Length: 98
Length: 146
Image (cartoon, rainbow over all chains, first blue to last red; front, side, top):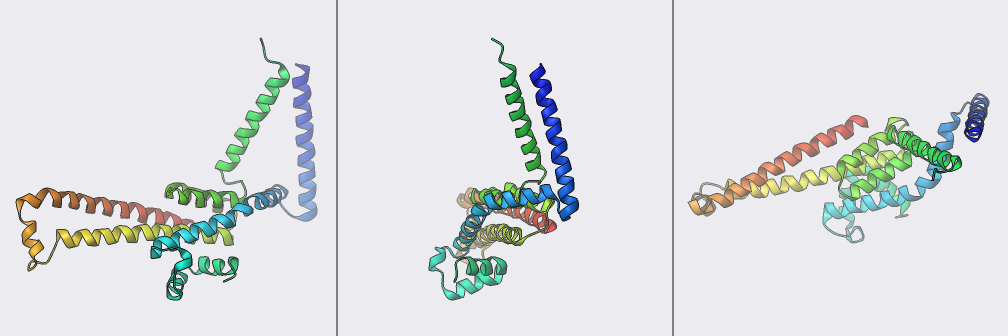
């Protein structure tokens, strides 16, 4: 029972310390610390896969649109795709250095 | 055999952490890229509902970014492609179901032996129309969040 009390007390102290630290950092930097922390750790972990997923999804759309592999589409087909999906096309051009 | 208090505390901590993370995830507090990745993976599995749900979570608590804009365009295009395919099938079916009066097919369609085949095609056309309505609704939902 004493261990449970100790754990709860340690948790409470940790929570208060974290809260104070967060408030302190927020008032010093003007940033929402938790959001920032999530953004940094999340972007590091998820950004690794999100770009790959975006390329895969975009190429699937190209495949469905023209019925062929994205590598086999012609210049005019690419322009057609670009017209319908300007942001995706621009991003693909940048990402794949076309 | 009562499990030790330490073990129970660890289990409880693990459960609370898991529940906490689930709640954070459910309400859109996880990093935006997490939801974008999930949305694109759902799209790969042809699960448009899940893709849109995750996209909405991605923009629920945070501002739209380049990645979410791309995801929006990709999901929207995937829906548009499905609608176009269904519309093409409806047009193809309409050619069989409603041929010009001066064509041979028109008179052939009047024969009783073709009735059941035509009925099947008619049902397929109705099914396609319904699917288009559902997809259009999903697209509207997506546009509302943009």
